[in-house]
Image (cartoon, rainbow, N blue to C red; front, top):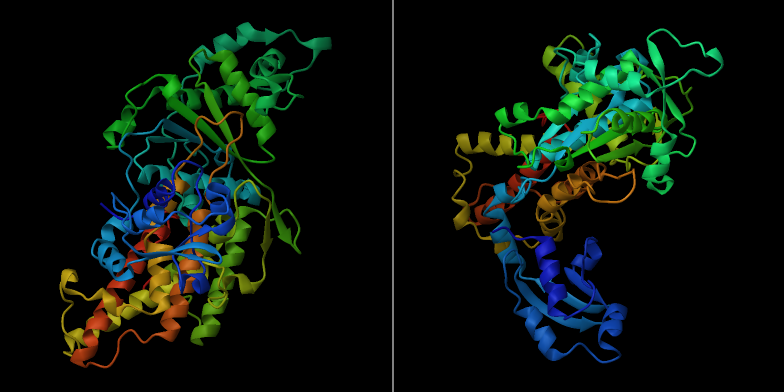
Length: 539
């Protein structure tokens, strides 16, 4: 079984006896020089009074064992509290001897609820897509990838119908289904006609409208405290609106397609086992609330759990608010091409391989900009060229640059090995990981590789049973993680010469370091895959 941060924290807290959690994992380099976990002094005083932690408790902590619990080297009182250090060489050996277990999501023992991800912004055309809607699309795509990786059965709605949208989504590396045929609306139309409120004062209905359905009692029944806007009164029912509902209805009813794809499905096929998550921009939320209530009004089998993941507004610094998603992409793409021409001293626009790299870099820039902020928060975009620099440590370009540096490192080792300068890579079981004593090496393992499966689980966690209409998702975690990983790797790589002189007495440390960076590479590639981004071998 793999070692886990959560498992270790759980065992440490249990060793202190009854009470809330006390221990936390250190992340800063200056603290990691002396400890890996800390139980703060004030928290211990609240638990044990002014007395010191009993010696038997400290002794039990040092001897901690259990599934997923990292081996402990020492535990001692300090002015900051109870400081614990792990047996680092043993942790290196356990983790780097099973890299695949740490570079992949943890698959839950039992499948969670079935999830319909609904992104209304995809019903239009690309040229009408506002930046706030683009943000919702990217959040929905990233969330879908995270859920799929954890074997959650997911249906994506709507299937796009605009003829230009699939090409634009492919450009953005967004994986979303295209439409085949429209869902039947006859049953919904019949129910809607029976629920229509008589027109007031001979109200003229627009083309395609059937009439109004009164929703006020549903708002009162569901309770305003759940998050529905108290101003919701009625909904104008149109043929287009019924088509939207019919597609959602069909997504809930038909799960046979998911089973044929090998995705785990909940054993209960009823609507109660399904959750619908509407990923909407803040401008779309009011209309989506109407749609929720109308669905409940017209369909007795509508899911009881409909949640809104509302993405905050996108503001553009120093530019008009009319910038569309395709214009934003073209701007970033032009900036990437310009920056590469300056770096390489020539225009690479005629080279198809380089143009593909530029397209990946453009999308990486956009996704890291759009996804590095918690989705419910306002996002401020800066459109200056500096946003795509490989020297800036917060950008997607910087992450892709370090991905390419890793690829170059392993390619250099391969070439040198083929020339006879280095031996072939030995079995991992024969490596001596006690030779890894640079603080940057422990930083990479303890802050990036070891906690990575837990981070992926948190990204895919949806508060299914939380009260209220609105939910949050941690879709910013992967981008932030990859940026920090790239910063730690870059600092280490700039300071430590990995491929040393071809002398036999230096090979042991070199191979231990290469195995560490193999794990970094695998974690980086998995994180990029969660964003729909391929690894790059050069920039």
